[in-house]
Image 1 (cartoon, rainbow, N blue to C red):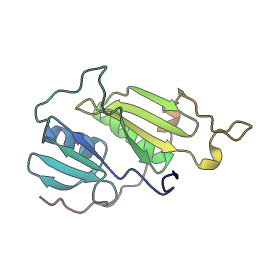
Image 2 (image 1 turned 135 degrees about the vertical axis):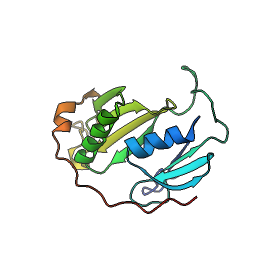
Image 3 (image 1 turned 180 degrees about the vertical axis):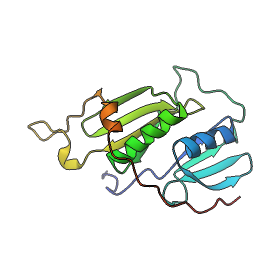
Length: 172
């Protein structure tokens, strides 16, 4: 066996949701993803930066459904990687403005993360990776990730991002 190709990435996540409009409102209006395509009330695709989709949302098997009960298997969280610490700070400002509570916030040495729930109670992690040369290493060279509290006030002190250009219109 050989290792997977080092440039392999998770391309997108597709979530089952109970209410498509409610889910779109969260991912579009709160987090800022753009709807790239919508199929009536059954599915929508959203992205950042004009990609075809990073998120798929559908009600094919879940319209009006309930979140999985605690103690069951399934998605723990979807993680959204922000390119800069300032972009993560922008995400925190959006959450605060929308009244979305955090489940937690952590500094892991390699990254800084915000944890929350979407309207369907799916776990969502919003995070920024530190540059690789700043990752904590043991004297042996082994990675030493940790979990420490994230200073949200310091994160909010990051400069605000300039307004981004609009994303192309949605196709139905």
